[in-house]
Image 1 (cartoon, rainbow, N blue to C red):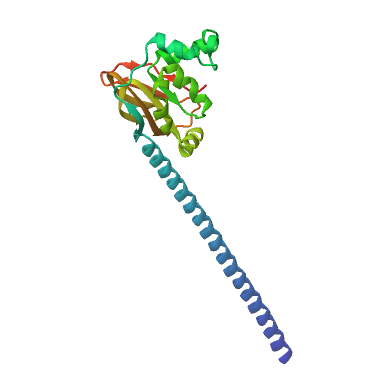
Image 2 (image 1 turned 45 degrees about the vertical axis):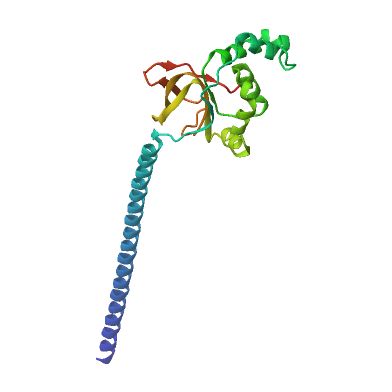
Length: 227
């Protein structure tokens, strides 16, 4: 009888241990499953939050990039006028840099561009690279004043694509607006004058996307001064 009782007790204990182990395993599995589910849910929430944040940032940047653009006029002279053509040619012919080469390519076309246009854009800066725009446009008559627009910071900002420059002859700037794909510049025509306008860039294009129109709606031809 005792043997049977001990045997039954053994069976009971073994069953209890088995049940206990099974229960513990089930509990651990449930906890692991819950932890895994919780982690998955957390990752989904984090991903959704990241997507929403990115979308909000993109929307904010797009909105921030359009609209009015601040600008500064680093040099202007309301009375300035281009010299007479004969005076201009005499000045250039007497310069060793040009001389008779002025009437040959590529200088001939370059001179015609700067002498006939009244709006020029620049996205780079170099001392020698400014010589042709200044002399060919007739601005050598105010040379000393013009150089005041350029210091080390300005030159670096231009070459880094952070700042753009606009020269206006016989026009005055009224406003600059970034439309999302170009700069829309409104100017007021004048009988004389020169303005050097600088403004922060919102584009990353190789060629500055810009349109200049008068307050009356007339488009002004713009030439790039970079060469």
